[in-house]
Image 1 (spheres, helix red, strand yellow):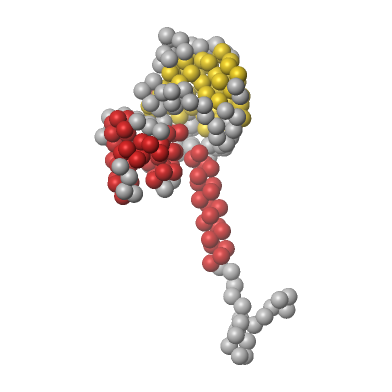
Image 2 (cartoon, rainbow, N blue to C red):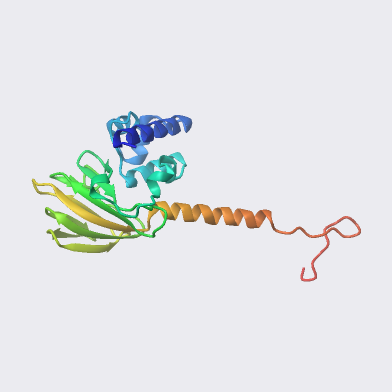
Length: 228
């Protein structure tokens, strides 16, 4: 499936779910932190979206992240992510990212490559500081990236890297007039975490449904266990 067809299919799914949940574009924009214009383009298949932003939309609409992907998009028989086949998703007008795994459900970490246009900030036009659970590793491939972490500022050049706990306030930006590219490896993997949580909930529900009932006594009332 081409990138254009993937964007159109995902956009239609998002629009259908938004209408089903009685959300207006304005409400979804306010809760997701994405602009109305970007969401409108997304629903019309004119723009792509990054996994982080899509995960926020999925949580708001009460569906799983995998709802927006076909099985062929998250699991492939070919384990190699070829550079010519990378699908770039926009994370706002200045940042795009591509997934570097052919099995999004099979691993605890999620590898991605980001491309930052000049003066771009991580997932937020205003350069807001982020804080969430997990861990991140960042390796600069090209250009210069400024990383904000725990009230400190670090300048990373090609070949430089940093590993952080994501629950500590952080962000990264490209404050230069040249494109920057970086490799990001994050934990946990939202795809696998979501599937594991779903499987655990299913097992728990099955245990409740298969719990043996106490036999009735001669008076028709449930017999007490000796331990009761």
